[in-house]
Image (tube, rainbow, N blue to C red; front, side, top):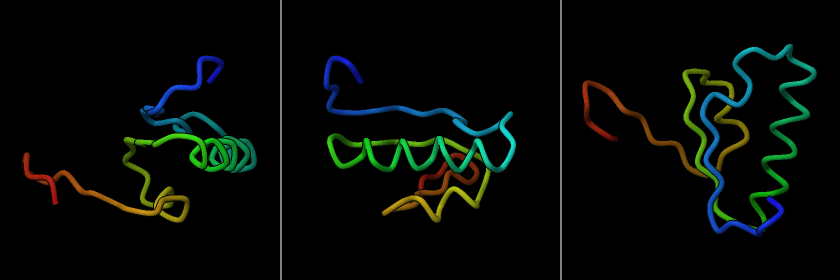
Length: 63
């Protein structure tokens, strides 16, 4: 974030967090997304509320 990246990759950014801390992190990621692209990989379907687009990987096929 210091070097102004064009893409932020977040792999399970909220996996071990309680719901309050997870919301804080997701809001930070969302705000940072105004400055660059953000890709979040997660098994948590609730994170979709923070995303503009959702892609699913099922049986090796991206949908």
